[in-house]
Image (cartoon, rainbow, N blue to C red; front, side):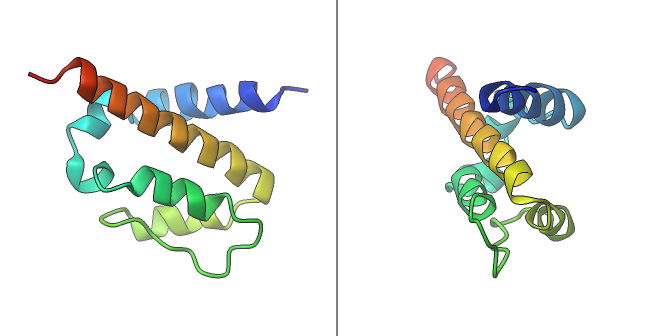
Amino acid sequence: MKTGVELIAIERNEKQIVNHGFTAEHHANHPEWYNKGQLIEAANTLSMKEIRSCLIPLNWDQDWFTKLCKRPYQERLIIAAALIASEWDRLNYLQNNSK
């Protein structure tokens, strides 16, 4: 059985980056999706034990995020933690690549 950290790393590296191309550079180059705290907002929504209202981050695909909200709690926690890691990656990318 994998640890939480291992599952988060798989979500971030294999699913978000490899499968969807959601790299730090991608996030930095799309401020309309990620620049106003949307990654943290999404993580907050997904980390709620019971989701009564799926608050979709600004400019995100509604169907896709609604499907995430319907996943089991433990799976949503992994996704939420990986989204927080992606916000960290985005901020580091911006800091290291600012002109």
